[in-house]
Length: 303
View 1 (cartoon, one colour):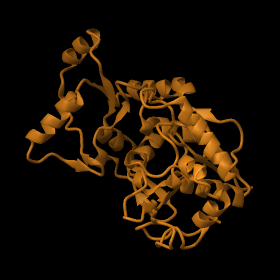
View 2 (cartoon, one colour):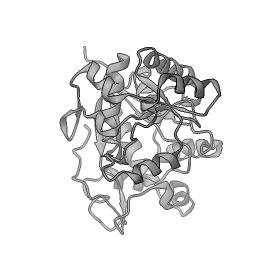
View 3 (cartoon, one colour):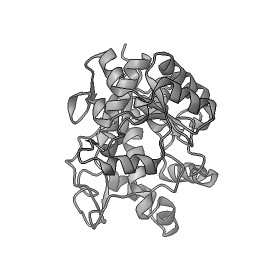
View 4 (spheres, helix red, strand yellow):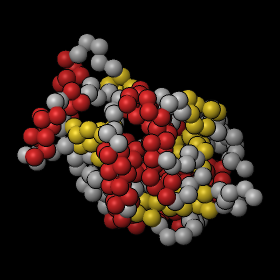
């Protein structure tokens, strides 16, 4: 008997949802409904400095307005910190984490002073400054209560687990190359965990079988696959979808002030028509008169 398909939508409550969020949520919702599975809602609210309760209420309001109903209770990452601490403790006990005392300014200065600073998918990568500290230097700083993050020694971790891969619905079998990201942070100075660790732990804990998310997170999956191997967690199937852009070709994003679903609702938008547009084979993605398009290849329908 085939395992039940479980998908999820996992927004961060740092702003109101826009049409790009609706597209991602719709794909995850429709995949689960088409396969007789479950669609979960998870709120990724670990960044206390940026997350707001009114945005959480807005997410719920927007999804209900669209008619996208989730199964079970909403899961909040802020209530799952013990799971992330346990994962960090395990990796630390395995000798795969090291404390990083660097500030962002110090990291930028070191990268700027190097004529051959390595780059990863998201720009220059951490140069490994704190990994070069001697043991007594680390112990003195920790004893003094110096603020620090915990980074994963990616090269050592990758060497221990050997070659890995993961499957994307559109890209096929993808060899994992987490070393291109450098030593990523798994526990931040200003938050008890990082996106990489929390999403990996949560997807496994919730039994997520299919991760549907934007292609901007495609590169992050290399790190998530490594963490799955290190922690003995299952690897879901991945569906990285194209990103919606506005009529000028700019990707829809909170930081760019893209029109929100709340503003569309206030302007009298019809949610049924919005869903029809998003589900359409061409209208939202080829400049079909609605002001939205995508520059990525068209995805196959998730049915």
